[in-house]
Amino acid sequence: MGNQVTVINHPLIQHKLTLMRRAETSTVKFRTLLKEISLLLAYEVTRDLPLKTELIQTPIAQMEAPVLAPDKKLVIVAIQRAGQGILDGMLELIPSARVGHIGLYRDPKSLIPVEYYFKVPHDIDKRDVLIVDPMLATGNSAIAAVERLKSTNPLSIKFVCLLAAPEGLEHFCSIHPDIAVYTASIDDKLDELGYIIPGLGDAGDRLFGTK
Ligand code: URA
Image 1 (cartoon, helix red, strand yellow):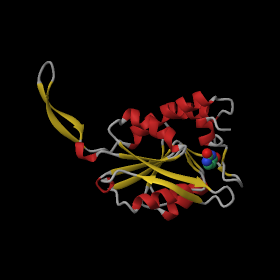
Image 2 (tube, protein in one colour):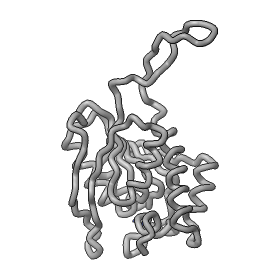
Image 3 (cartoon, protein in one colour):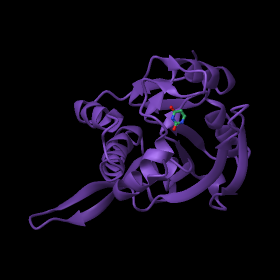
């Protein structure tokens, strides 16, 4: 694989992920955990954000203090609908980020993603993009989302998920070898319906209580 694939195996993330996986975890708890994990994921994936310095006055002295470079505001693009859960968490940590939405649903028979909505900031070509979706399963939605985002010509794209299936990850990396992927876990496999095994079930249903 040419891609940079990072498994973020911080103990807090791994513990919270186990709680999310448990079948008995309620919708409310699942939503809270996804938000908390997303905050921690955001911390890791923004490690390389550029800084500049600003002259400030502390109660004691002046100093040149680091601040985020203002012209580099991120765009977080959530793949609907489950990506919304990660977006909410990330926005708590990076409130100044701009937001994009891409609506894709999986055709249940072919598992091919169908786009029904796309809205991103007009100046996305001057920004770095994080695409977020909890589940990289077949990889089809992630591939379609990256393809669509590449057509808007952003400065960079990273893909952030919670769980990835090895088959989907390999598929994704074969199509988009230039895109860095961040995940909290690479699980065992996909089943014949395109679910990640052992996974956590349908992320959207568990997040929104629609099952
Ligand atoms: N999407 C989900 O929500 N769960 C899976 O296991 C696979 C795709």
